[in-house]
Length: 167
Ligand SMILES: [Zn+2]
Figure 1 (spheres, rainbow, N blue to C red):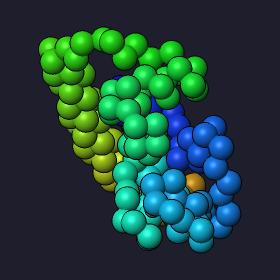
Figure 2: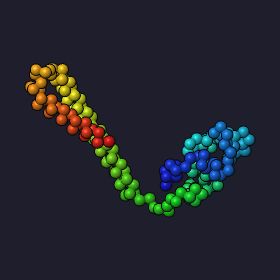
Figure 3: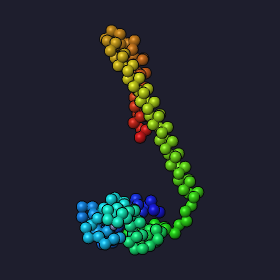
Figure 4: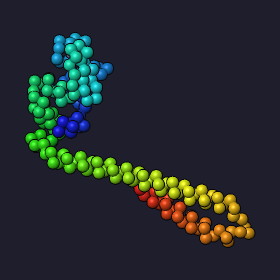
């Protein structure tokens, strides 16, 4: 939930919505008597050079409206019409499954990269042979090379297509 909110919104959305004026990435700190705009606004976080208050955009809302962290998320959910289901219980099995899925994807990606590299290496070797034979072919001996050249060209083309279709 927290991650969803942090992904969907930025600090700027929050301060715009809750009526702060930002200038040069600074606003007047609502957490101490601030006349000089000493709070720096980052993408998802804030830091006050006056009172050292810091946190992410959910914590900003939490402190600003004196809420619990969960209630701050609920307020943001409503105010920004995010439609997140904040009452949903955290399902550890589901989280584990998502993580497993993520690892599986990473392994697949890794395997694919290795396969890709292998195919590229083989293609490179074919191309070297093709260029090697090309230099030796002339009008008198070409018949001796027809078989090997068509074999190599066919293999190389097939590999090229395979490589093209991998990503
Ligand atoms: Zn402050």
